[in-house]
Image (cartoon, rainbow, N blue to C red):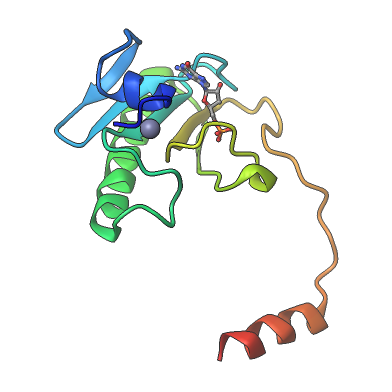
Length: 133
Ligand code: 5GP
Ligand code: ZN
């Protein structure tokens, strides 16, 4: 646990919170400022700031939990769709620097995450593919 991390405290039950699900490695809590009804966060109990720090096996488990919760919320809420998303870094919109996956039921309310669709730029694609080799 990281002393100054709010999600460490919530994930490990140091602070009370609305818990949807809990197991040995994770706690799934309701987001305090939900995008929609049923918006929850999958938190590992151990502190990892972002996806790069998380061990691969734990990432796999986190997404299994997210999938299970999404399936259940679909039945419980009767939502039309579910967005599963995860931010890494301030520029990506991360505000709490303890890894978490958002599971957001969608009811046709419009975009909760909006970007302006651009035009594909072949030079950008080529540059990335070349740098990868
Ligand atoms: P991020 O922007 O880092 O991807 O998401 C952080 C999320 O955590 C936000 O949706 C925010 O509403 C939620 N959040 C921040 N502080 C708390 C808290 O103390 N309790 C709960 N349940 N959610 C929180
Ligand atoms: Zn933490």
